[in-house]
Image 1: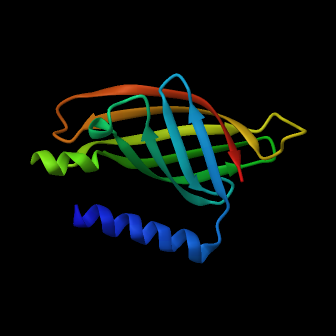
Image 2: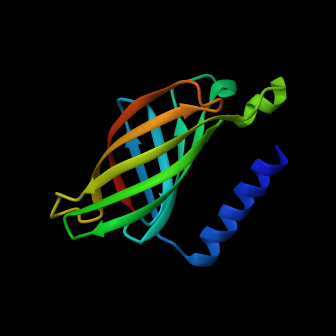
Length: 145
């Protein structure tokens, strides 16, 4: 739990010092809300929160992304991250659920809303024991504030 608090404090400090633009996304089919740094920068991160679940079962996912193509119409990126549940520590269970690798795009098709985007991702996910996994896809909307 101390490691989680340290990570959250570090990221909060990083955001406040870098004066980064914030991006918010919502993937309605997977019930996931994402809050992250400016996704138009070369390197950025995203914290995702699973909604539509009991508080004790809330999964969070912290990803670090690298944009290898930033264009006016779309960004294409790759990343990796960790999926965790901070409440698992209270049940004497590891807070780490698993790991993911992400390939995605943020398409910006709205002329009147240039900061809005449609997000599509494909993401292999493996559990913390590396003995099971799945291929995930995400589709949603977002906005750079």
